[in-house]
Length: 419
Image 1 (tube, rainbow, N blue to C red):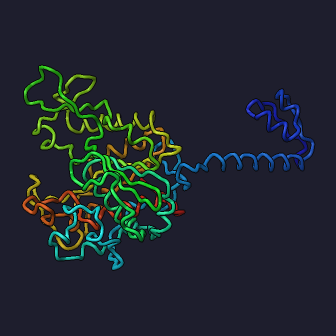
Image 2: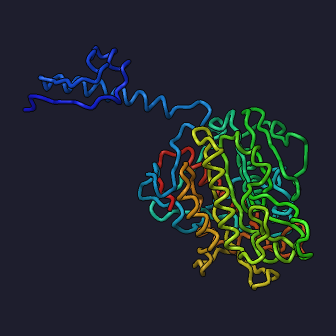
Image 3: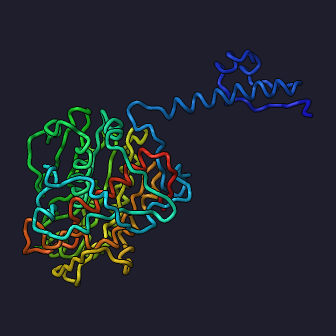
């Protein structure tokens, strides 16, 4: 039996709590003694109730998603820390797919609507991602629409980000009766070059937006007297100048990677700049790492993660049949093996960066799951069949699964591992 319990360092206990509990001596942080074990139990219960109440009030925020946020960095413990790693698994046949008809969704752009562009086989539409040790819950579109009410969802990245943006809109539209209540705010058609597109779901008072930022960092003009081969300077130490428009969002999803190639950089005259000085000898991998560090610093300094849920999607697998990106063979079924496509230096750098952000960021590590889906690419079924495409995916298709995973992290009670 415990007869005495002694406390001598109580400076951290709030005086108003002491007053409420009638412990006047706590005001001056004097040593005090409980002579009754029952008293210990009573005080312990009251303190526990207080802590729980404060904790509940802290995590409840009417301006943010109410589900617990996921942390994927080395210094934090993830709420999604169970035995289910949603990114380790395989694709299984499922006749309930696809989730929508692209021809009935005005936001699925023509270039990604493979069936409308003449693809005859439909087997690629009938696959669902199955994690090895668990199930991804089937989401209820009506429940998700309600949970998104009043929110602002923002995608930032390249054209692969745009496909996920289009996919989310098309999925959510299946739960909206009045399709005309879903519209692009300025009446713009979806094109490759528009920097900002904003679709509003009027009945639910939320928007799903896309910002085109292919490198995430700021492009600009090179310094005077630079070599003639330099047409553009990519300022690796400055985030894209439209970043202020991303901040006041409830859900923020990033991607980058597909423009970080010699053909889309050096051959077009793009070179790297840091602190106003051109870095002509810098490698693309080194520049990518520096750009991610700039993004990380921006997240830590500018984004209020008590409101904004931040995600970063890893590099998407491509399936070109040669090294020149000119030949694209699209089979009817997924590969049975990843054939090395589940690994990417860019993905590794993204993973390392996300794990070391001091604020909560969730990793969407889609590289392994996309590695199998050589069958799901646009191929020659685009709005320009003369240019094959083994980088982008058809809609409906693989980007729908990215959004299913996103919704699972946001709204499911299932505990997931994310690395």
